[in-house]
Every structure is written in structure tokens, then in C-alpha cells.
Image 1 (cartoon, rainbow, N blue to C red):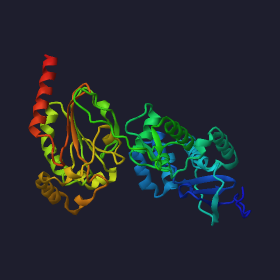
Image 2 (cartoon, rainbow, N blue to C red):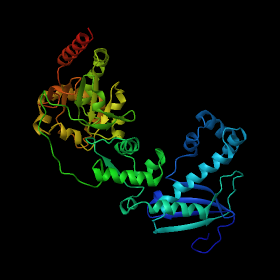
Image 3 (cartoon, helix red, strand yellow):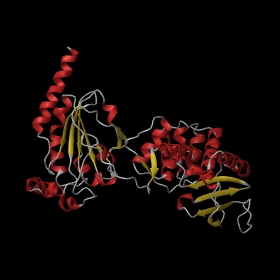
Image 4 (spheres, rainbow, N blue to C red):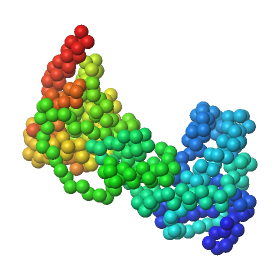
Length: 408
């Protein structure tokens, strides 16, 4: 193999490839016509790769400590019998395929640089370059034009109202909910690029995912009323993962729609909700809160209170629209908000002025039965017009009584 200047890559050399999309940057180490190492932002760490091969995390940590560097750690695992030479060679080959696959149809190479010889590892991580490239090209040919148009820097938005089924689809959907780019998904899930691109394209076609720059028209549903089934949704949770409302069937749910994470009206109310949590939990009630903020913003506001219930992010307001929530200038300026606002500013400080587009939002709360049917729908007439805690506790008592009668 040779670079664009014709320099030989058959010796002990390092080739750096840079593309218009910085996420595609790839560094290859060559020795005697073989690739001994590959570095790419699209690859999971070697620790993750070793984990898939059954090496215990504690053993990996010990190898890192004893080995001092990657080569030393791998050598420690092989010599200690924790990893066979055959398995190590397979992992090296899989990593090279995963790194090269996204590059096949990217002809816009910005630069390539051959650097001074690097120290080659004394382990069988070398992979035949020509044979691997042929394998990668065959895999790339199985992808259509839609898959090839995807870029590692692409950010796809997940519809909280249309969660998919299937393990691979669910992994990509959950990652999109949390705002990961395709490149970040490839590294963290981990998932080879062709599988990721093919699945993401299918989710785009079905409407489960959409491009971040796609502007959907706002369609706000009519307000919900008691007797209607609570619309299902799936949103990312502050503590990790995601929460699907339908997964809570069989338990009564107190669902609260708040404004932004640092809201001076919502945080005092949630402080009260936190004090009620244990009493409601004992009665079988699950509290779920939704916020018109990103996951990162949730950590800066409500997250500091460490609520013992799901704190979900919906920065696109899709569930708000589905549940019929509205905006109101008069409801925001209502004088009855003042006591709560004073308390909220004491709690949140100047961060309470952050709006994230939710400043005029009117919150809402829903008491949902075990069957997923709304038993009470409360839309705040002004910002601090929350459901009285006595009403929620009385509802929870009825839920507990009903369950007790069922078992009797």
C-alpha cells in the first residue's frame, strides 16, 4: 500500500487519514504490509471489546495497571491465560473492519499524513490489509444510498410517541433519545457501522427517528379528560435509560408535566412531591415527572434535588403537545404565583430566569389508574395552580383500597 505521495507503507509506519467530517479521522499503524493497530472515534475502547470476549472487568483493570499501556495490558492477558491468541487476533480484525467500513464511500479525503515509525506491538494484533479491505468493500456494497448518506456527526431525533420494538432498534432509539450522534452510538453501544446505518435508516423510514433539522408542524391535541387512555410515550430518564409509560401498567401513576429544569414554580412543587413520595410508594403509586429540558439541563436544575422518581426530558415538547398542554401569558403573570416564585428563586437563584422556551408554559398533572386510564386530568389555570396534595393522597388511598379488596 502507498499514500498519496507514493511513500511505502510496508515498513513500520503510521498513516493518519482526515476527512471533512472530523469524526471519520482514522489512524492506522503498518508493519510489513499488515495493520497492527487502528484508532478511530467510531470504535469502542479495547476494554469494551475485551468485555465482549468474556474478560472480567476486574481482570481488565488489573491488566491496565500491570501492563502500563495497551500492548503491555494485552500481553499480560495473553500470558496470564485470560485471553487466547486466537481471540485477540479476532478482536483486532473486527476492530479494523469496524473502523474502515464507514470510510469506503467517503472519497473527500482532506489530508493523509505518514508519520515516523511507531513501536509495533509484539502480539498477533496484525491484520492483513488487502484481504480486510476486500471484506470491508463487500460489506459496504450491501448498503443502499440512504445508508451511505449517513454521517457519524448526524444527530437524529427520536419520537417519544412511537418507540420501536426489537433489541437493536431499542438500543439506537434510546441513544437517540439521549442526544447521541451516530458516531457516538457506534462507539458506546457498541455497533458496527453497517448495522447501525441499516437500522437507523429503517427507523427513519418508519418515523421513529427523524433528522435533527426536520421541522415538524406543531399539532397540539385537545385537552385530555377522565376516562381517556393516557397516551403512551418513551422519554430519557435523568439517571440513565428511558421510561416507557406503558411499562407501568398495573400500577397507579401520578404524572406531572413541569416547565424547564430550573423553573421557580415547578421546583418548589417537586420539593413537596419528594416529601410525599414514600407515603405514595407504600400505597403502590408511581410518580413520573416530565420536563421541557434536555438531559444536561435537568442535571443543572431539578436533578440537584435528587428526586426518588423518574425525571424525564422532553426538550422537543412532543409529549406536551400530545397531552394538550398550552402556553399562557396571563397564567404566568398571575399574582397568585408570587409566593411560589419567591420560594423558587430562593431555591434556584438566578438560574430560575432560564426559560428554555417554557417560560409561558402551563403545567398539568394526571392521575392514572392501573389500567392506564386517566382518572383525573388537571391543567394549571395559572403557573402555581397545582393539584392539592390532599387530593392526590385521597386518590392514592382509594387505589390502595381497591388493590386490597382485589386480593381479599
